Image 1 (tube, helix red, strand yellow):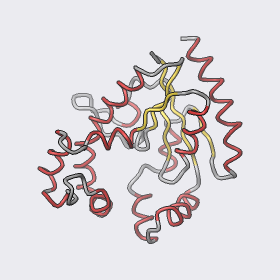
Image 2: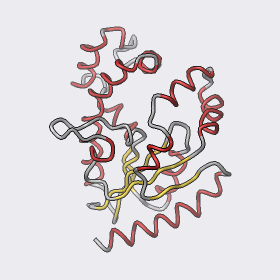
Image 3: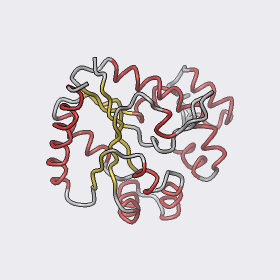
Image 4: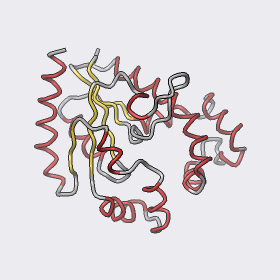
Length: 212
């Protein structure tokens, strides 16, 4: 059981997956919010039924699963639609991540949460962002300049510049993410540079977890 959980976040195309892969290589369990979000709206789930109720049958692909490309275009063009979708998905993701981290082996676990800084308020608390995940003991931000995000998005996803700009603008700002950080990895250099950063943080987190 991992009682010490580190939240890992960063903007789109910041290199979060590269960082989590290196933690996993060191034997650290990673609970991924993107995977949890897929489970939250899997075929036959209550989450998917809520999405269809909110957005109509057009939210579905021919096989009955969520039409992710269509929904992505829709929510990044309409802030109200994005918030409505997040209100359905985020609470389920929080519950899944907490359960996965609690069951993880090792002294600590990582919850990879791309939208940690944007997390909606928990019902009844009025608190969002980091406060929506009070069980996180520390927050690690993978940081890159906005121009690097833009270049990586265009190369990675094959999208046009307008959609790349909307995707970046829909997230918290770089400054807002850094404001919730306990630790920062600046990932604007070669991937090889990540090894030393992750090794140092792994040693720090193991010491902190051991200290209670």
